[in-house]
Amino acid sequence: MEVSSKKQKVADDVNSSGSSAEGDEPMVTSQSFISSTNVLNVTVSSMADDEFRDFIESSHGTPSDAPSVTPPIGNVASSTGTASDAPSVTPPVGNVGSSTGAPSDAPSVTPPIGNVASGSGTPSEEPSVTPPIGNMASKFIDIFEPYLPEDVIQDFPDVGDQDADDNACVGHKEPLSSLVAEFQSGSPIIQAKIKLLYDNYAALRRVRKDGNCFYRSFMFSYLEHILETQDTAEVDRILANIEQCRKAQLVLGDQEYVISEIFSLFIDLLKSVIQENDNSISHELLLDKSCDQTFSDNVVLFLRMVTSGELRIRAEFFAPFAGVESTGMAKFCQDSVETMGEDCDHVHITALCDALGVPTRVECLDQSTSSSGDLTPKHHDFIPMQSGASDAGNPPVPLVTLLYRPGHYDILYPK
Image 1 (tube, one colour):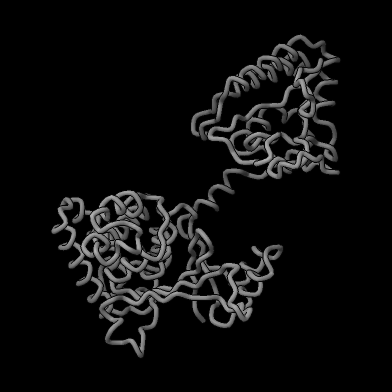
Image 2 (cartoon, helix red, strand yellow):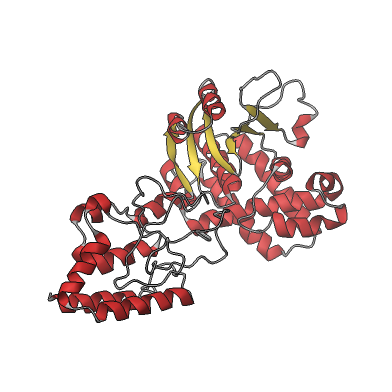
């Protein structure tokens, strides 16, 4: 390709980079981005061939000093470093550190000064080479790949693969040592608590961080327990509880056809983990089903509906814990329970465990310590109401065990 045609390719690609190709995530476009690309288009188009070569070399340099093209998070000059509602992805024009921001004769792609998130504004000794985020990574490679050294191109991660790993509804079982690696440079208190977890737990299973993590964790952990134990008596017991939940929601005025469809999906899944049935499923297929977005969301919706029904039918009891009057419980459930992506806390867990009769333990991994300095992780046992009174001296063994870190739940596996 002649230099002049390469030059036009850069101009055309940059000028059209405000819209994403089919299948890409929508890109954030702003007037400032359009204006900047127009300046770059004019500048590149008007360069002579020698000037164009100099522009490419000065803009990208060698692998050792390859500049980063990082979309600003919030306001780079801001002391907060918080993201704005719709941050624009704008190639810097001229010198980012300049007070005027006027374009130079040959616009350079300049690394952000200091740490964008820190707000210090102090330049680091060696600016880090940070790959662009989301679609900008592929746009950057598409435009400049003919001019970038091979080892620089290889530094860019495969964004699609990363997204696939991060977005798995339910992950694979991992040794507990993976938590140590995750927090190896974190709080000493957290590290100490992880070591103490080794006394009772062998593994964990990560769940997607999307606000539905408690329900996904509860769902998979309980069904996995039934699959492994083949406890038909437990299945009969919970089916009776589910029927009581269905009747309660009809009393509350919920639509019967909606309830029946969602409840039937979970009942069929529950029966399928009993191996004596014709449509029995394996552990691998249970994981596959739990990772199917639509299927998994429908089971989460079932658990949310059960939780909502229990809270509303016992509104007078739960209202103080939810921070609402009993007359406002319906609104609380609509906003905080039935809506997908809404986090849950003690009141939600208590209601769900009471409704289904499933004893659940939650181990808390946080930075709290006792007055004596004891670092032993705290746990909360949610004992169903119907079994709590009669078995107070001999509480039931939890059927579900979860790991709680502020804002997120994963599945824990006792030794």
